[in-house]
Length: 370
Image (cartoon, rainbow, N blue to C red; front, side):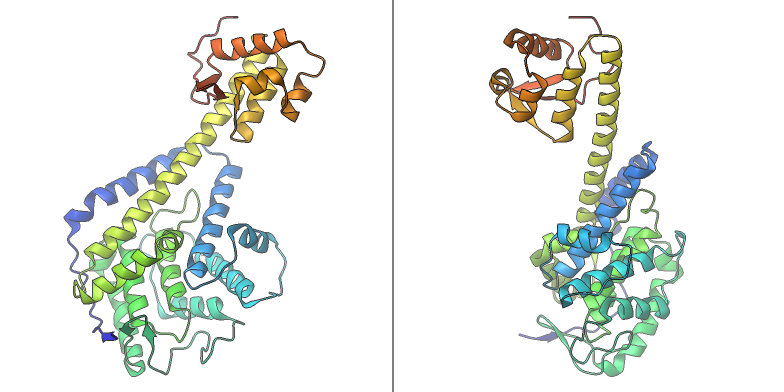
């Protein structure tokens, strides 16, 4: 049954219930920002986040392009002519991501009518959605699921009040992630445009996250989290309106759980990268010290680079092509010797007969010749 909800700009947040999540988000951010990652790795994280953000925000609306297809589309640095509306949506979303990153990060960044309209213009250009005019407010009544959106005649006033609210001292004093999530809720509830409202709301949210201090190591957006949890995302939006009567604590809590999860994953990936780099450096040192042969280093790097483990039996049998090439014309005894060396120096982890590179090995490991 369709229902109306009067948009009121009072989040009624119970900050105590989200304090731990905010602390975790800041802790993960501080760790990630302090890691000595090379520029190439930071760019890789940035690219991954952007592709996931595009996949998330378009996927929620039904776009079926995969992350791999999106990555291939946005990789090209020349203007492309989309072959389908799905490709156009992806290219448009990429343009919006570039718009978000045009300005240097600034914690007190102002959200104004220009950035919102420009975001909608870019997000819906050349998509030929029925009755949609890029950058202009809708002129008809719309539904979002069971939610009857505000009357079109009320939109200009609601948008003015939204802009005043989101830039007020009260909201600017909020944690930047809370400000971003709050802006998302109100924009998607006002539903100012004929089409693309969810994508615009999520883009403005990403805009505020970017300017809130979460931009030093990769672009951040909650869109991929919402996409993966689409049913719960819609449920939380509806509950904020019709169950909690405008209190946003539960919706903000839900969004922050996703944000912390995203930050935790990026920390894991970054730390893993640094561990792998250190591990490979140790292998170089061991080769230089004649504690291992180059072939042992090659095998371990192969395991690391391909995120593989290999059974001791397969290693001994040499039926895997790469292993066969390493031990071409070598004896079985030499294979067994190398396994002994890898074990003794702590270069491998062993689990149920499977060997994997022990990237957690430190220089404090056994440095004596086997």
